Length: 345
Ligand code: 5GP
Ligand code: MN
Image (cartoon, rainbow, N blue to C red):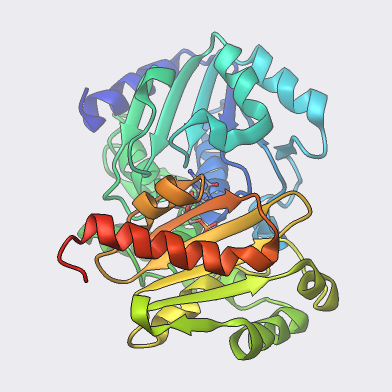
């Protein structure tokens, strides 16, 4: 099925007004929350109720997308979250490519007989788990793909003025955050959508302030500490590593979302092609990988870090003492480069 025929199929399903749940991934980011809220607001403006269920809390800076606290977070309301999934007839999955990305929701999702729709921009979606798949890894964000999908609906006819202002605002938030304010992975569509948004008086400046300019002082000081005392450059591999320990979390009063963007900083150094950020949690080490050149961090995360993502932005997890992660990373990257670039010495 082409994305367009899948979108037509989705529009037909939405017309049936089934009991609908909207789901996104663990550690939801701006694209996860923006696409979920955008979908919910679009449905609501057509008189249809739905519920958003997220596996874990979104960072505080995205709170403006849910002023009435209607998002059901599994971490806070376990039974309610599972009940919504169990009773849904239609489940719209946004911004993830496999059910495991929803952590504790995955088994309940797999067991559900609801019609499942996936709208996502990650590589290699697990198509077998969904009835309709709208996938485009070249899209900057799931929000961009959601926007294109909605624009193709016969009731919208490509006219953004037919969407409510708050639907557009939620969708714009995911595009802004996933592209780092139009810096990465942009397509001609990304800019036409931004231009639609501006014509519809969506305040992109205000969203930019909300998501990139409201951090705490302690977050800024943590960034200074990490760049001075933790960032290590490995010249032979053109790589950088940063480690955030549990001690750092305590000392700098770390809140969810505080390390957002840190992994991109070493890429500003000319010779750094791959940047890795490791964040210690009580259960595991969270891994964030970025690349600005030919190295596919999606493949690297798949092969060595129990994760995945996109060619130039990926993540995963490690289960080892924090003191060992740098060495493990450097060994893994070296091996990875040897197998993927055979002419490398
Ligand atoms: P971040 O480094 O910002 O947490 O994640 C970057 C990208 O990698 C995101 O697109 C995200 O979906 C993906 N990602 C992050 N963590 C994981 C993970 O544990 N597993 C997989 N498959 N993808 C991840
Ligand atoms: Mn995304």
